[in-house]
Picture 1 (cartoon, one colour):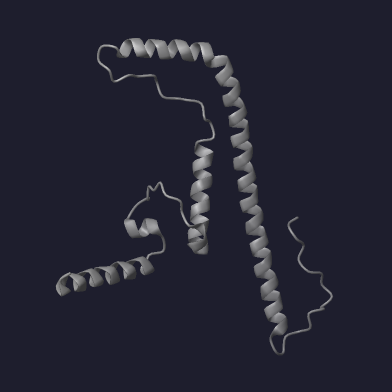
Picture 2 (spheres, helix red, strand yellow):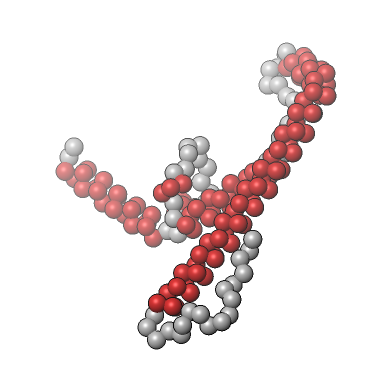
Length: 160
């Protein structure tokens, strides 16, 4: 490669690395929501990025809790399309009792799963706050000249 091209590529890499480091989130960096179909490496995210990712995913799950099909039946074929649509409608009408029972079960499962994830998220937040409170108490106790830890008052009650 030409040295000039290598230099320009290096400058561009540095420019975008600095922009990435200065941005609080990927959405801020791109100027909007990012649509991706690749797995996100959750282990590499910061706490604030992880919070955002959890919120987005819970919101997505909550929006799509009902899995029943909503779109109308259509066909793009010009001449045979109406026949295809008619056959699909007949098939769905015949299968509706069976598919409805499956969709009802799936919807109940989805609702419970979203509620479980939300409860886990809330519990995690409470545990995180409790750990921070305990760390502050421990740091205060370790500071020179701090009052004795056994002041007679009970520790804060847990959220259990």
